[in-house]
Length: 339
Image (cartoon, rainbow, N blue to C red; front, top):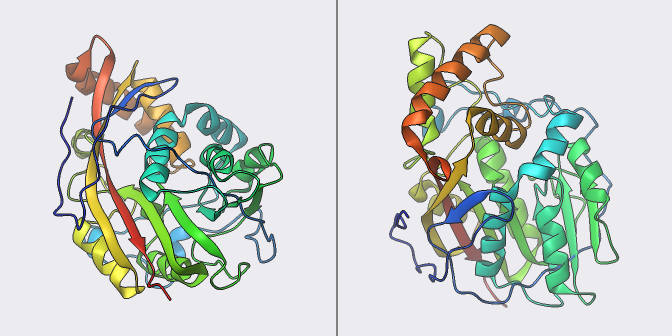
């Protein structure tokens, strides 16, 4: 097992037993205390929801201005999702679900709270949080991808509501209306301007003393697959940037929080270990998790070539449990000023 990569956090995440994925062989290297997890639900306002076919998320003003984009422009599109990708994500998102439960535990969500899940995907984590907050609380789950919201809607209950919506526009929700806002594996899909707006909006809708939590890809410590993929693409003479997420460093996360008026409690990198049966499982997960953006800049022939080369490269990482890959996420917990 790997060790936690420290990032000089304001408060170290507590450590406890390893959390295992339910259907995948995925283990969390460092996890917080085994405290009870509380789930909250909030009433969804569908007004001002995003259109059925949203445009590219990377097209907003200010895109590509930060250091993460210095090596080249990326374009993340919301229009590449398909019913097949949405269903694949629903059945193959154990990794996101399990580190999401870790995020919720660290946030200390409690019974009776009002919670906003931003970028809820197919609603697995939101449904989990709804059970924690109980009937006295509520969870509102929004996502910009209508096909995934359709699946999340099937999980709806009295204290869980779902709607199409974007992180950078929470105008459907009143100021100071939530106790907790979280974004699980969402922020790295937003460009610089969208990130700033999303965190500012979270600050607006949180009550005094309310808590914000998010997990997001780390630029200073990328997924183990990334350098291997860059090598393969370079050998083919293709752009290694492509449709990659807009990842941040720990320092950039701290600045982002401070600009929005948040007080950071924890900002650090956690390392997770996953095992995959083969390259096809890895590519399927990457495709569904990126709502079709992973390698979407390549032709069909180039994708086949990349698949073959990646398969050969990844065999060196095979263990009895499967192909072993480490991924790293920045976990951030912050709160607004109290009364």
